[in-house]
Amino acid sequence: MKPVDYDLLIAAVEGHLHNAALRQAAARAAPGSDGSADEREALLARLAASPAGEGVAVAKIDTQPELARRLAGKDADYLSRLVHRLAHRRGLAAFRLHSHAWALTGDDGTLTNTLAPMVDMQFRDRGALGIATARITLSVVTGRTSDMETPEVLVDRLMESARLLQRDGGGRMLALDGPDMSEIRLATSIRTELVTAIRQGQLHVCFQPKVDAESGAPVSAEVLVRWESPLLGHLSPATFIPVVERAGLLGHVTDWVLRQAAASQVALRNAGLPARLAVNIGASEFNDALPSRIARIFAEHSADESLLEVEVTETSVLTDPAEADLIVQALHARGIAVALDDFGTGYSSLAHLQACAVDTIKIDRSFVKRVAESGPDQKIVLGIISLARMLGMETVAEGVELESQRAWLTEHDCDTLQGYVISRPLRFEDYCALLEEWLGKASAGPA
Image (cartoon, rainbow, N blue to C red):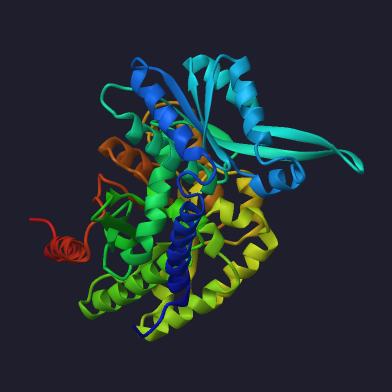
């Protein structure tokens, strides 16, 4: 349907093509075509007869084309015999599942010790030009038999997990139900679901107020993206944004958030409420095209760019501070303020401030957490506030959750506060209601 978002269309098509390729590969490796069907049946029979806790692993060759080239001229079963011979020497049993995947069973510790050095290894063979070396990597997933799971289900889970691991880059050995493998499964699900999430309205934004530390008056709000997936449930940005960025789809989310911010700003302005908003921009999106992107989106909604603040992390300016400063200058030329987020947690923070003229420093919550307690965090926060004042920058403390933290930060001249002690992130209607309540109390004055 028009208008067509070509990047999302391409992502969807790539997903369908990948699934089609898997089906074709399965058809080419039909049962009985390479003897793997018989070996799979032998594997299932062995696992069924094994006690609970028997070790089993699936290993897939990541660099199959290179290996096939190196073995060109050798008989087709050369590699299979090699794997079986190695397994036999270690007291393991090996079963070929298809042309470049094997299952091995036996003692759990022996399995791990045997496969660990094979995950990333050098392969040498002698040819017409002498001995050549190639790097061969494996995707290995280990598990154990259980009375709660049939051998068929266990093998299928191992095979699918090895495939996901291979798509994630391979060259590793992970436990089937370990946290790293769970993270890969979640990332895969996120990539698959995101293609339709924006279109189906699964994403929404919340607004977390920022207030003046001295008066408590509302200053602005940070626009935060949230995802309620029917399949995956509630996903925090810390979970899905890194996956979205690695998948090359962060630009779609960024543009969507900017549109939400622009529309919300217009609504706030029309209601006579404070309309200043802040939006996080990922490192991959902080480039020379950003100012024009913001200008285009805000023009579409007749929104005011001068009421927008862009929050960037130190990672965004780390690679090329000079280029980052040009981007900041272009944003300033449009009236857009820039805040350096999570200040103090990256590298060379002072160098960043020297090279990149931002307007605001956001003090990371890791320092704010213990700021009311006497210790090094107090000294760090005092140093940041003092440095910001000398450079003509404002300070925002994020993650303020206790009244004691609020009191200390106010006493020591932090400009703006943000955190649960003020308000949790709110849906737009609730944010408007909170602003009206605050402004109503301020106009009424003391009782």
